[in-house]
Length: 375
Image (cartoon, rainbow, N blue to C red; front, side, top):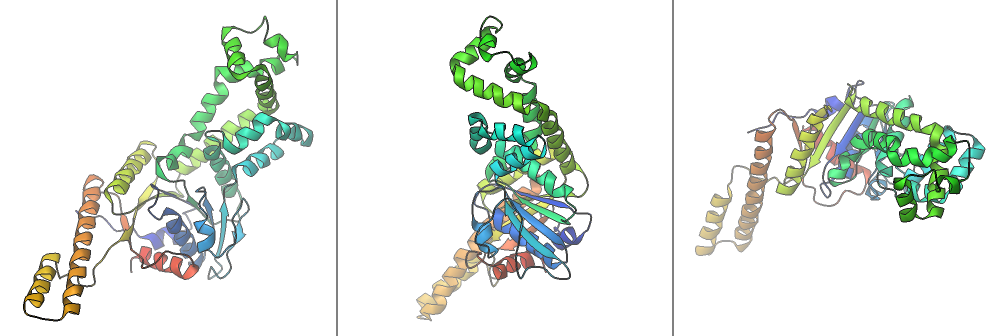
């Protein structure tokens, strides 16, 4: 089944499109696709920023930047008709620090920064990256400097973990552990040891035994310091989640024409539908094409065998066999793509041919953008 065509240029040029989220499994060229989309948008006249959450450094290299960090950096030589391209990579600790600084006093912020539990949580705690991605996206969207934000998500199914950030945060903030840890502060600052004594129930004593009294004190101090900020955390995460569901946001699933990648793409499509997120379409990357689509693998092999039997050109025979291999690969990829489209007939598709070499500069990204244009 032939899928409807995805009009990428219309999506990028439409002033109503404000956020594009690229998701997909690892190794399918998602980072390159996000960069190519952002570059093309800038050259269609839009002020664009691309945010990568993937820790890989390929985006900086492709854009000609020595490094990427938590601050958008303008890419020189990119953009036309008033358009600009800026790029950045999520630094979850710095984002967390900025949130703390913005929503508490300087003295309280320093107490939080010095807390050992905060230092661990802000760099490696499970779920912090996804939540901070929501924070950063919300900050970028609130800044009217950007006409379009392109988000490159982490690989594999964790790419959609940020959709769960508001719910996970709410469960964390409303959980029994947090209420327990807040008890000392809400009791008027009495000593933690008293809370760990007669007043603590069996659950609390088990927590103290598992964590240790010192760590529990550090966690309690951290939670107490953030107590007044918790509502803001939840509200901002939920606001960003709601923003992703509104008109103006578009999700693009990126896949390669391989069975595993398309299986993951099918999962993403189904999950986005469940979440009622606006799916724009599928980018099928690294598609192999043949120079002579009318010459099948079977005919090419037959011609090669005839040449070899009659003493014909070995070069021509070899070229025919190479074409046969490529035609077989292209046929296999087409069957996989058609299987995906049969399962998801309403999902538009844009195809990007396999490139002869890795993309490492702006001209390479422009070639990918031109392929996405489909003309």
